[in-house]
Image (cartoon, rainbow, N blue to C red; front, side):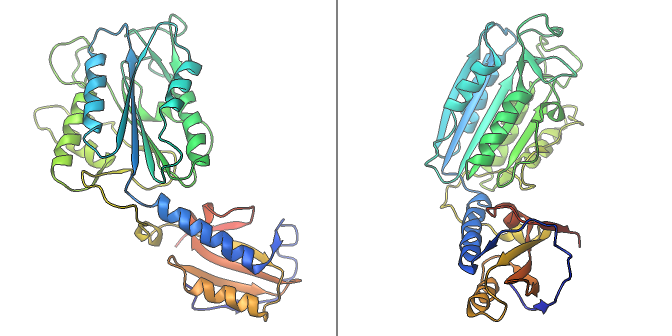
Length: 348
């Protein structure tokens, strides 16, 4: 929403900044498209969920049962497709990538969530999962989860409406499984990881639940309340169990928008949730239009800014062989705009 416009005549401030000079109608169309995609991306409802759980076939420490339990737990949500995948000693990174990508929700769904779960072992200090506990580097089969995460981040960046959740039950911490590359714009990408056993006993100990068992128990407890909940709520519930020592290092690693993936037992229609936009960081974005400031087309564009469903404020208009517009908006909206332009992040 715009309530104040300042006209100025800058002298060379943005002379070296590459800007597209376009018609006002193109600017309006780009913002309309970005707002529409923002409405989908901020909705907490998924019309399709796909869960993919994997473990090594040679693992005899209960990973198979944990994998089945995780799938059964997620299937209590609406519209879930389940995929259980067993890793062999000859499995490679590329083979796992291939099977994961085949399990992704269909592109035709407007709002979708992909959940990847692994139960098993890994090499501490690396991003590698292995079939054996205590396996050393280069001493047996290894698969790089960070590589898979990087590829899934790329898919989430390109495919509108797709969020990604990693739940890893091994000795690898969440920060070790982070994907390479920048944060994903327009999507939520989360990782939660916990050790197979919180007790000091090894994975083969008979007492004490695994991380998957505790995650699923917390998920079911929260689901039974009928309220929406997030990964942070699951962690708090896990650590609130008085009879078990808490997972002090548990955290939710986000590599996309700083918005939580939200679960609910209640299915509803996909609707925008612009409340998160109102509290997000803002940015000043530059538009360079062909028409002069006194043109009816520019006036129409400014009026459009006044009536958008998310706040857009005109900071400055300047006559420079057309009109230069400095516009303040949520950084979430700015990131979804098509084309290259200058953006200045603001801190309140």
